Image (cartoon, rainbow, N blue to C red; front, side, top):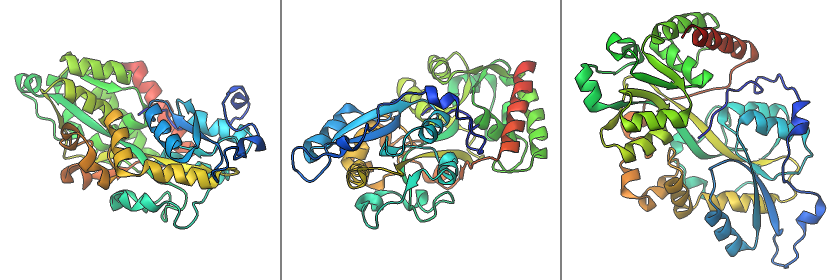
Length: 367
């Protein structure tokens, strides 16, 4: 799961650059034609994260309903939002924004509410991930994939160093010097720093960021580097560092390859972000878009996607279709210990975002 720091979600939207973004969305009313006479439009348009869908799933949907799904991908929420604001209404039918961007989508009138009763498989989703603050009635959003940030430790290396990590404060242990990797993501790093400072990670208090900065400056001593997520995953898998602060999907990949790895720092809350299936305002294919979303929520379809892309499983009914190793991965099918200790990361306002950027710029410059 890719994450880019949310600079546009605060409502400070620069649209000039968006004009350069290209897509393969609907070209007009012709795309709405039902040429085969089966009662459905022949094509719908999905704007999605890369590595979030398989062609096999799209082919299954087309085989069953005669509807071809044309997928275009993006690499960040900012790219998604800018493209939709600058583009033509109805160019895409479905998108997959992160929960921290849903309010920005609402503010820019980009969302189409679901028809009542259209998403019949919503009941497959665990109630813990429904009715959240960004969409209390799930009027606009359906949870698709999610990720939590976790501390992943190489147990033999940690034992050799004599280190136990139960809290974010434990990451400051001098014995971890040059043995810790953190992925290069501003929001995730600030969240960790707030936790390490004993501050609520969803605080909106600007002064809290000064305390978080002091934590991060201390943490620099133990950091091998702020790393790209793929490099971090490879390093912890190979045993090149004792501990990595990492996305859960990457943690799962690493744990599948190295049985010495385990999730630690369990006395802290686990930050969760949720990517949601939404229908876009101006869609010409609402019926078909809802049909596709309902199809994705089928247990066997959801399980196939999770098997390919090992994120947090929101679909309770899918668990029986998952391979055993994923069922036993506590950061995929969340253990009660983790599930009961989640914190949903919320959207930040512009002033908070600006200061977060400034803090991380200073901290990384000091490394």
